[in-house]
Image (cartoon, rainbow, N blue to C red):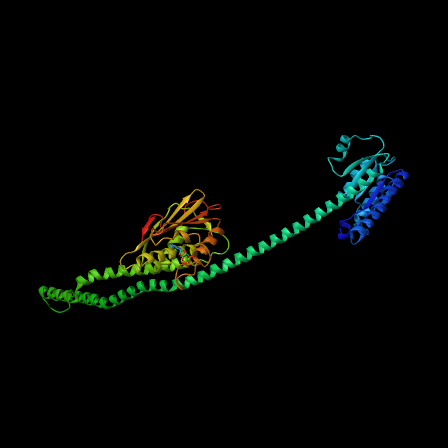
Amino acid sequence: MSDAAKFENRRILVIDDNAAIHDDLRKILSNAGEADAELARMDAAIFGSDDPDTAATRYQLDSAYQGQEGLACVRAAYDADEPYAMAFVDVRMPPGWDGIETIARLWEVDPRLQTVICTAFSDYSWDEMVRQLGETDRVLILKKPFDNIEVRQMAVALCAKWDLAVHAECSRAKLEQVVTERARELMARKEELAETHAQLLQAQKLESIGQLAAGIAHEINTPIQFVGDNIRFFEDNVTSLFVILENYARMIDPGGESLTWEERTDKIRKLLEELDLEFLKVEIPAAIEQSLEGVQRVATIVQSMKSFSHPGGDEKQVADLNRAIESTITVARNEWKYVASVQTDFDPDLPMVPCMIGDLNQVFLNMIINAAHAISAVVGDGADARGVITIRTRRDGDWVEIQIRDTGCGIPEEIQSNIFNPFFTTKEVGKGTGQGLAIAQTTIRKHGGTLLVDSTPGNGATFTIRLPLDDAVDGSAESSESEEAHTVR
Ligand SMILES: Nc1ncnc2c1ncn2[C@@H]1O[C@H](COP(=O)(O)OP(=O)(O)O)[C@@H](O)[C@H]1O
Ligand SMILES: [Mg+2]
């Protein structure tokens, strides 16, 4: 509907089989228009309103003599975007529809139409009308013969009511549009935020991989170095073993030198002393064992790096959190080993958890590094004493709980509410960026979980992560640690 048609609708349809009624109504209402216009003109002259004509009530009256004809008029007006505000409908119009049926049909075409049913006799009681038309506020009863004032009041009131209803509809539509637009803006903002979070997370991952790389290189370098030393030790001593073997072979060769048994045993004994077989017997197996251990350590670190840097993706997938935490502890070893020991207390029956494991690994890493920093604030470089970081996993109904506790400096009460804010840090430049816990909190929330802190200054801190199991696959994780749930490093 056009804006012009929306407000100030004064179009009225009269449906009556009696032509005289049309004339009466026309007279009453056109007089009203003139009277009102005159009043408006006087008003303008006295009070100086700008446009006296707009204030006047000018009705446009159309006529129909049967219900069917009336319906055609209403439909044509509605389709032309010039609907009627109201209709006066006679109750008896033989041979066609009566007034009540006509009104019911008019409303099917134009539900906004206000109606006045005109009646000389009490053809219908109000109850009967309600039964036929339903409980409605769009119909009034006007008794014949007409009272001019009553007719005018009805025209004014019902046209104004039509205007108000349309006005309200427009406002609601506008409001709905504003709300939809706001909702769209909010969605866009939310997507932007998610994108920013993903970028931040990625940046932090890259940063921590860089930070961890030096430590991991160091962690790999140590076993590689002693494996190398051991291989050089074999290289030096394996020759001695061959010399001994060769001498044995020569001594038992019947076609060889003609020596007495004493001479032979004497020679062998001297050789064994010279080459220190006792030493080789102890050292060679020890070196082999140590080398195997070293190779195993390198293999574990490489495996942990693979598992830690698991790209994950945006979709949740079930993961073994015990194993993920284990890997994170290993890749971060160089960050904590000088100042703390790490104890794990894993629930051997922990179910697989639906999650984005790559993102969670980053959270665990942030917390372990924070714990190590907090402990180092107490024990310094760890030369005299070391603290403890305890990581505990448990199932709690439909939730999985991960607790990371440290014996560090704790968090002063007054900053506890700030630590999750982006860029809040108490650390010196280069050591802290203030993003670890902010990212951790967003990530945990994205999982539908919670992250809480509990700390008494001077008495360490405990961070508790709770993750929902919702669509978890039941059955416990096949943790490599399940037989040794409690591990101390
Ligand atoms: N385990 C903890 N013990 C004591 N304080 C902590 C601990 N974890 C975090 N904090 C405090 O919260 C602040 C914010 O941590 P975080 O967001 O990881 O940023 P950053 O480590 O870069 O400072 C830290 O600077 C520190 O003051
Ligand atoms: Mg941090």
